[in-house]
Image 1 (cartoon, rainbow, N blue to C red):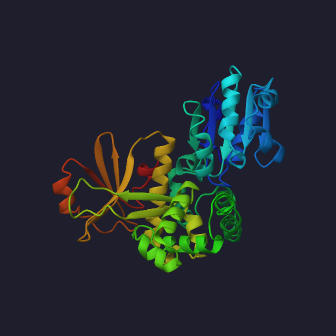
Image 2: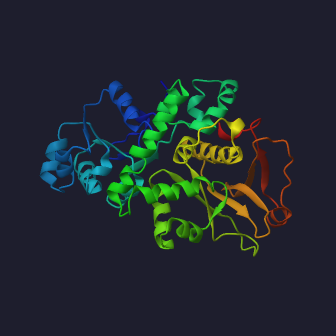
Image 3: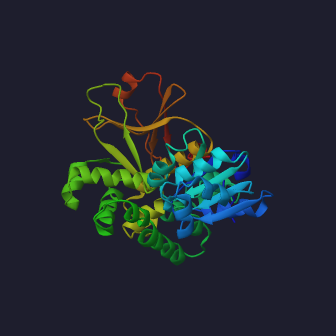
Length: 374
């Protein structure tokens, strides 16, 4: 069993709601159950899938909600995004019962964040659980063993069930099930969309453009939707933990591209399942794309789990000079180029050097990537 990075017993606080976000099948319920199996707190566990709980906690009826929570030290609501006005219901609990602790999990940040955001201002501790990170895998494997398994992470990603599956056939079956049954479930339930086909068509287009700047106009033409709708769908994908948007970096240099964005999948396996492409690296022409996607998402996990605060950008000029990822943190700029082979020497663009003289730079390849993600 893979031990996750979060220790819930250290994160729960009296009269606060610990909100655990993350995609479906990423291990939120498992993390919750492991914590509950060892806690001495008197707790009540319910699911947002339960119609009775939906009606009760969505009612904003003080008396009924307080009666429901009375006598417990901890209230736990799994799949809380299913409950209308869940934020108001939880606010009543933490405001009216001294010392009570609450945990709520949700697979869709766009709905759960909207429902809990304003009512729980100052009353919540948010955290996001991602697919398994290299930081977590380091408890199972040493650095050499992780490198030995690198091809597998690039192709199949790191959802918990995928990492623990023994066969390629089983890994593919799990990923296809996630894409076909779970990936779009919350979006189709909670948002006004034209159906799953157009969403998958859009994701396929993004899958082939990982690491490249994306034109909303071109996407709109290809999926036969208006630009505004495409933009809304991409925003939903990000809030539903499918994609991560990275914007362009600029300090008002005319040549710099800022009107477009790059999109990365939060998991390589999901990206490959969307396009049904699980061939080994030796027979692929998109290894560079897989490497860049993997590096960006593993870095995002590290920064989230180690509380490294900063902003992420790409840098590109209209005449083709670029840096894959720029991190702005601690008052400094750090530029990273992701190269799978690592054989070529990276020439830092002159425009970048002249404009951002104090920035640091590094090429990340399969020989030196461990320090970047661990």
